[in-house]
Image (cartoon, helix red, strand yellow):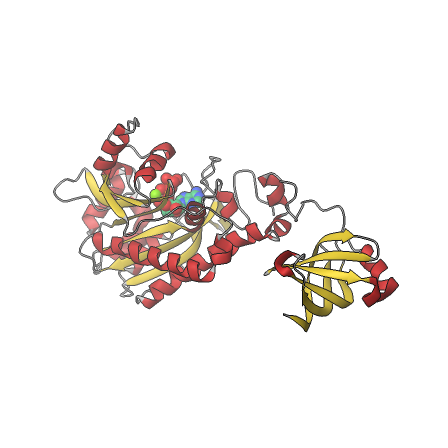
Length: 417
Ligand code: ATP
Ligand code: MG
C-alpha cells in the first residue's frame, strides 16, 4: 500500500508536537488515521498553523498514503495541504480521546462529543442495525409497518403513568404503548402489523433500566390459535438480528462482552420459574411479578428465557385467561441478559369478557369506547408482543445502564440535551 492520493475530512483527535515533525490523529466515523506533518513537505508556515490547531477542530487533509509500521493501524497520511474547516473551542467539556474517564451525566451533557468516541458510536450503530434487521425480518414475513398515534385520549392500562399534554381545548396524553391501536388494527383486516415507535412513560422511578421515553418494537398478529403462534417469531427474529449484527457490526461488537445466547429460546412456566428461584434462595409469592434480582437469577440458568402462563392478576387487562384455569393467562415475558426485554400475550377478543376484564382492573369501559368498538363488528383472535429497543441493546451488549443505549436519554432529571 502507498502512494495513493487522498482527501480526508474529520476531527483532530490528538496532536503530538515534535517540533519539525507533528502528528495529528484524524478521526471520522470509520476510525482514526495518523497524519504525519513534515516541515520538508509542507513548509514552515503550514507547520506553524498545524501547531496552533485545537483538538476536535474539523480539518481537510490532502496527502498521500504510505505504510508506516509505527503508525497506529500501520498507515499514515503525509499531507501536502491541510485546511482548517471549523475551529473547536478549548477546553473541551468532555475528553473525546477517552484518556480520562468521565461519569455518565457529564458524558450525556455533551452527548455529541461522547458519540464521537468509537465505543459509544458503536452502540448507536448496533441499535440502528437491530432496528433495521427487526423491520426487514417482519417485512419479509408479510407484516405491514404502521405508526399508531403518539397523542392519545386514553391510557393503555390505567391513568397513572401518562404524561398529560394540552391538545387545543382538550386533555390528551403521550402514548405509553401502541397496544390498544395495534389491537384495533386486528379488526381492520391488516392481520399482521409491525411497529417501531417511541413510547412515553411518566414512571417517576429512577433506575438503571427505565427511561421516560423509549423505543418499542411491536408486532400483532390476527387469526392465531393461541400464544404459541406469536411466540415462535421470537426465535426467528432473534436469530436474524444476531446474524445481521455479525455480518454488519463485527467491528462495533468488539467493544463489548456480549453474552452467548442460546436459541431457540428456553420456555418455562411462571410456576416453574418460582420453583427454580426458590432453589436459588429467592422466594416470590405466587401472584407477584419478578424482582430485578429474580430476573438476573433466571438468566443465569437460561439466557434468554421465556416465562409464560402468568397469574392473570399481575398482567394487563387484555391478556387472555386460560379457559381451564382462569387464574393464569396466556401472557409471557422474555428475559435476556438478566432483564425483561419483552412482554406479550394472546389478547381477549370477546367483547363481554373484555369489558369484564377492564372492570376487574378498576378501569372505566366508557373511557375505552374507541377501543371496544373494534370488538363489536368482527374481531379475530389475536396476540402479539413488544420488545424495548434500549432494553434489548443494553442486555445484548451487557451495558450497565439503559441510558447508554438511548441516544438522548429522558429520565426523571434529564430533559436536555
Ligand atoms: P418493567 O416491568 O420492566 O418496568 P413493563 O412490564 O412495565 O416493564 P411493558 O409494558 O411490558 O413494560 O413494555 C414492553 C417492553 O418495553 C418491556 O419489556 C421493556 O423492554 C420496554 N420498556 C418498558 N418500560 C420501559 C421503560 N420505562 N424504559 C425502557 N424500556 C421500557
Ligand atoms: Mg412487561
